[in-house]
Length: 263
Image (tube, rainbow, N blue to C red):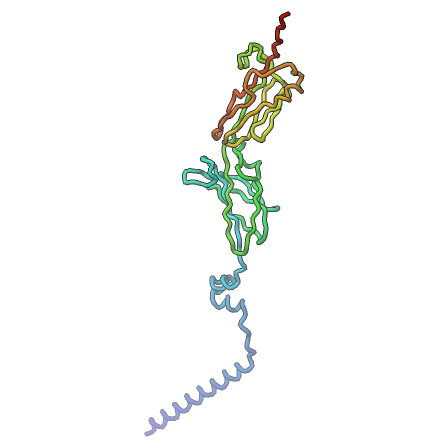
């Protein structure tokens, strides 16, 4: 009987202690001011640091727009980078004061503001034997989150070389000892060249294409050869392949022969 009473007393004591502990915790919680849930609190609670989670990154994403530029050797001249064509490494592209350099694949990704932007290719970073087939400056309009592909095709440049000469024997060829004519004007389509003191001329940095090379006959007169005439055609049509140096585009002149008058 005594043991049973003791057990009842012990049980009542335990219940009283638990009730007292709960009341004390409630009083403490009432004294604590609730804290608002902030962005920092969320981050620390989720990942234990101040780094933003992928979910939060997607919420606070502000947009990004790029120019995906490629500089390449356009072997067939079609303006498109084909599977057998290679990119040009270490070529610099510029947008305002910012620059970027192409990788071994000839590519570079440029992050730019929205609106109208001008992208320019730094010609000094192109290998000297190449020429760009489009204008070195390209203007684009880009919207938010847009990616615009931009191609800069390069070709191996060509040359046209020749001579204007005094054709003493009238055989149409510049023989040893025959002098050149300086100051003569030559056209290759819309390009123009003037002969040097030795009668030679050169067109450099030409694209692979068809050209009509023409001597301006009036320039011979201005060069004090008024009484001379051509011993060769004054127009020649040629076709250039990439990297070709086309030589021997020559024009000969000789002193006009006087007609003998018989009495």
